[in-house]
Length: 405
Ligand SMILES: Cc1ncc(COP(=O)(O)O)c(C=O)c1O
Image 1 (cartoon, rainbow, N blue to C red):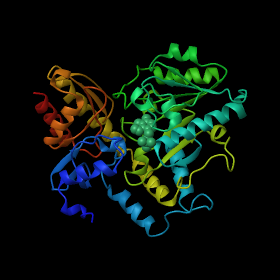
Image 2 (tube, rainbow, N blue to C red):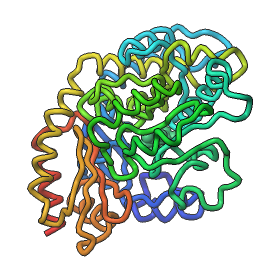
Image 3 (cartoon, protein in one colour):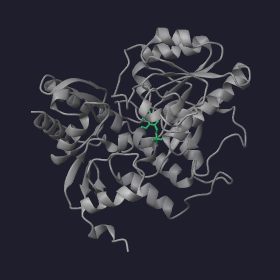
């Protein structure tokens, strides 16, 4: 008989996963059992500062009281209808999300990858129905080193061989240009182009921030050439960079916005394609859907998330504490850190490879009570909940300094 979790040690639990779970992740050896705010606790009661926040799915911290309350309230009323029927929570969610983002319509989905897939379908349909691209010829221009998710179509335009190898045949219709290169984009976009799809900050690539003017340039170019600008803000959006959306740093409004992660408050998977009416208006009944997309529990939590963002408090905290993060990392350059990039409460930190791989540094930080995740090679990313205090942030930076000494 399988022993209940509480009688097993962390090592037992980690070992037990091996034979029964697909090995598509390589987690740090910590077994989390409880969490609140910026802190998580393992099965033995050891506490860790969460400096990853579920890849930005936990922007409001673990179990934010307003979000938990919204979820509880909804659990007691109605959890799922499917879109075969209306539910009494969805209209408000869409009204508030469009008001927050300055766009017109919402296509609710669940995971980030689904939002990206849905955005691609919508862009292609727009190209045929509105732009007049000949059937089957629409192209989408994307950036090298992108990360947009894991489906077969999305990995078709990944430049990461680990993500692609062994998963072909791939979906055609994508052109890849270097990120942060407007000249390359100018050349790649033609009359078949439905959309340019980019991350305003490339998260998985190591928090790569484009030059000032790039996002505004993409906006100008896509408008001039008559194609859509799709901004994947699944990781960069909803407060992380010190603004509601990362495109706001250049006063840009894309045609299509992809949101996910924090939209579900760290409680339920909630994602969305948010777009201008002319774009999302191309979908008709039967052409796209999702059993769980727009379910009342997701809509209730998503609405509570939007309410938190409406206060501006989280964006303000990310901007203010982002200065503490940047100043702290600046101090560490030359002391084990070779370079870093940050915007708001989000940083990619390149560690001197002589001091260890990103994984090794992450394991050392874990032993100091700080949870982070490496990306490529010797880069670690920091993306704490936006509820973190300056003191907690400084303690994480002190721990980083210690493990690099
Ligand atoms: C920019 C971006 N898009 C899409 C995704 C995919 O989201 P999900 O893992 O929820 O499918 C991610 C996940 O890291 C992401 O960072």
